[in-house]
Amino acid sequence: MPLEHLPATTDVDAVVAALERDGAVIVDDVLDRSTCDRLDDELAPSLATTPGGPDDFSGRNTRRFGALIARSATCRDLVMHPLALSTAAAWLAHATNFQLHLTQVIAIGPDSPAQPVHRDQWAFDFFPFPAGYEVQCNSIWALTDFTEANGATRVVIGSHRRPDGLSFTNDDTEPAEMRRGSVLLYSGSVYHGGGANTTDETRIGLNITYNLAWLRQEENQYLAVPQDLAATLPIDLLRLMGYDRGAYALGYIDDLRDPIEAIRPDLADSTAVGFGVTDGLAERAAGLSG
Image (tube, rainbow, N blue to C red; front, side, top):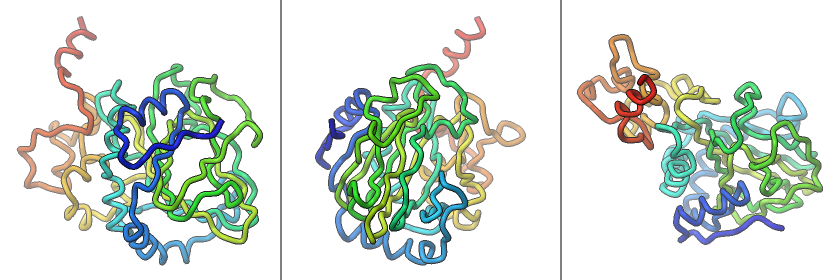
């Protein structure tokens, strides 16, 4: 059974329904050609100087690089894309708030073998999260067409409901074939991996993921984005990057100051806290302590 494709006009309820059923879904033609072209231009210098990976999992003929907020103005818009943010907010609504987990270009070169099938949430030291407790909402934006032959991401459909620590082969997966400008949205718990590239072209995807704000980010945004640049960024993007409290009381500075003050001292009186923040924190805390 292939992955479901939804139109760019779809609403978040349809996306979440597909995620709940299959663990992954493709939304077609979200980005127009000019946006994709700008991304290509902004990312080309970094792609040209990035070597292949150090091991078989990363892909020895696969080039990966992050710090996309610092490297690409258009990537900043993509991080804040309404479809991605609304999907993450709905998928991770069981927690107080969420944050940006990583930004990464993944360019699978010719004659690359398939990546081992895995769960992205294994990055959290292989912690066995309770079944059904989702900790990530992920996206891969296609900057080239994704085909089965050129290494389209492969997904074990419905595997987000399967036990942890399983092993799968290529025969258990379906390719996330999609046109340039489309996006694959998937859970951190679904088993998947980069496909084998048997062509003479490079498959390029842009991986942007979000996670619960009480977990550590895979990419350290405070160091990946220079502070002088961070000071110029929109407040909502800064908070999503992690310049915010996580959950009820995580990540404050010294005397309970809002961490955004480290970048924007003029926001010392700001009361905004977190993306997807749940109302009634005081009531929840009182219930736990009672």
